[in-house]
Structure formats: structure tokens, C-alpha cells
Length: 380
Image 1: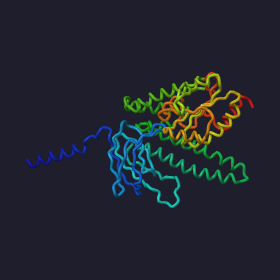
Image 2: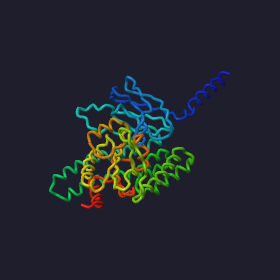
Image 3: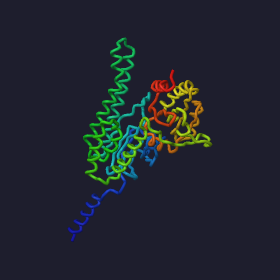
Image 4: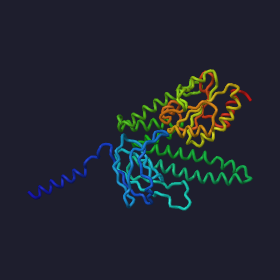
């Protein structure tokens, strides 16, 4: 009888150890070497430029943490370590251990955070490889910038020309490493997070092969179906954004909400539409060029419309006062999520030129490229 009791207890203990994980819950634990408890650790979901804090994590007195994270759906989430470091992870079926250095203890602080490794499983191995790819690329960009600076002081034009190609070589290198990851880890669910980095037309066959691999494994996998749906919509949107197509219409309010503007309001005139945000440094740097071109051609019929994707209205209004742009200004709702999808851009500034019929004449206009295009339209 005693032996039977022991056997039953052993079977119960084994069944507890083998119990399946709760749906949509993973455990995340780790340690922060140098905590900064002025800020909390947060789990973030990003959607374009928008981000949502889903949960917060409290550190124990010894800097450790242990947290059960309930996620909506499998995918990429971000764990932010008290505003000092952050790392992306794949939430699905892998418990994770993530250790951070934490607060920068150096006397002179340089924005160059160390690489963070996610100890998890096959899905998070893909994210580790992508993160390390980006980390090494960033380190090499620093060195390349230094090389360009040293070459600029030289009298050797050949060295200058070679050094100035450095960033292009780095872009080619990081792109090819990304393709390597995509080719060799195509059976992992998390490979879906890599596909957005495959941007060249020549990458399409690789993307198709990855989708076929995932479909063979689980044709009804929800993130896969969602990706295919988004991809089909993006393809349709890309067709709508071809040169010569009528620009997709929208209508957004000015700061007082008393008037709306969109592409149709400028029919009969050439119009530049500038998508920007107050927090975007390159956008702010482009505004003097926009002002110069507007002053040059406004009497010849050039119109302009600035579309902010700012989340905070106060930040947008403050930037408008500082920049003093003398043309209509509107703010896109939902931090520009829908307009970015409609106009097919992921980075700003994104500047489009429309003709008098509302057709797209040029995209991604900045600086000298904008000046040349407008000179073609209006003459010198």
C-alpha cells in the first residue's frame, strides 16, 4: 500500500512538472547590475512610431526581477530597463531570462549601450541575431564616421572618395547579414519579425520561400495570416502610390479645428505635402529648405501642406510656433498610423509633390533633390 502511495505521489509530481504553459503567459526574469529606481522597467508594444506601455516590472532589493507577462498575441515586444537599455523579445512559448547592465556608471556618458542577450529558445535566437547585427552595425558606423572625418583632413582625394562610401558598404553588409538570418531560420515563427527588413525587390523570392515554410508548418498560424493580409494591403497601397497615380485622399484638421485640409483642396495647383513631427530632427532640419523653395515659387503657384504625425498636440503647436511655417498645418490622428499605411512610408520626413490634377509627380524629396525637381516644374 505504501509503495502504491509513493507511486501516485511521484506521478502527481511529474504531471505538475509537465503541465502545459498557461495560454498567452510567459515568465521573464533576470537581474539589473546597476539599477536606477527613479524609473520602472516597462514592457512596450510598438506600432510604427507609436508605442504603448503594457505593463511595469518592479525590481527586488538585490536588482533581480521575476514577472509573468500576459500578451495579446505572439509577436515582438520591448522590455525597457529603466530608460537606460532596452531589448526586443518574441513572446509566445518561451520563458526568458534577460540580464541588463542598467545605469551608466561612467563619468562621461556616451549613448552607446551594450548588447543585451535574451536567453530563451529558438524564436528568441532569431531576435538575438538581428539585435547583434544592428549592434555591430552601429559600432562600425561610429568607426566609419571617424574614418570619414580623418579622410576629410587629407589632401588625398582617392582616400576621401573611398571613405565616403563607408556608410553604403555598411548598409550592404547589414542587409546581407539580414538575408542570411532570413534564409537559415525560416522555420521559426519569429522570422516574421525579420521580413520588414527585406526591402529590395530582389528579396521577394526569399520572402515567398519563408512564407511557404511557415505555411507548411502551420497554415492557420494567426500572425502569419495577419502578415499576409498586411502584405496584400501594402501591395495595393504601393500601386496607389506609383508616380502618375492620383494621391490617396485625406482630410485632417488645423490646430483650431475650424478647417480641414487634404490633397483635393489644392487641385489646380502644384502642392508639396510634407509629413513630419516635432520630435523628428531631420524633419526640423528640412524646414529651412521647404521655406526657401516656397519663397522662390509661391508666386508661380506652388502650395504646401504640412502633416504632423505628433501624438501630443502641445508638442506639435510648440514646434509650429518655433518654425513659423507660412502654409497650412494639420495633424494626423492616431500618431499618423493610418496615413503612414495609406501613403506607404515608415520614416520621416516624407515629402511628396503633386501636380495640378492631384497626381504624384515625385516622392522622398529632400534638399537638392527637391530643388532640382521644382526647377524642372517652374523653371529657374
